Image 1 (cartoon, rainbow, N blue to C red):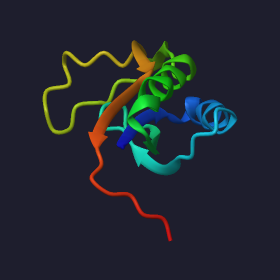
Image 2 (cartoon, helix red, strand yellow):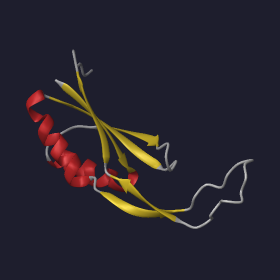
Image 3 (tube, helix red, strand yellow):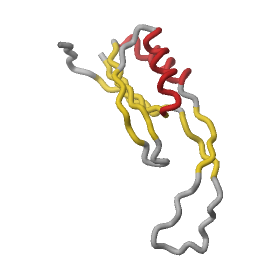
Length: 109
């Protein structure tokens, strides 16, 4: 048995959740916050048998695509603002960060 932990952007969360349910995978969703852009993320915890891990990974890949987004840069705090450029910057967001962990025991009460 494996635990698949997937951190996805909130924009991809509903689409991924629906795809997992459609394929008969159960998932627990947790609200989380990203460190880089401080934007909302959703962390999915999906328990599955070893032979189904690749299917779960395929569903995540199909539903969590990266994309470019304009973001306003954070102004420097207490530093020299001479080189600060207050123009939006294009960064790549989305996609998924996925961890696959071995599970020794699973119980449901």
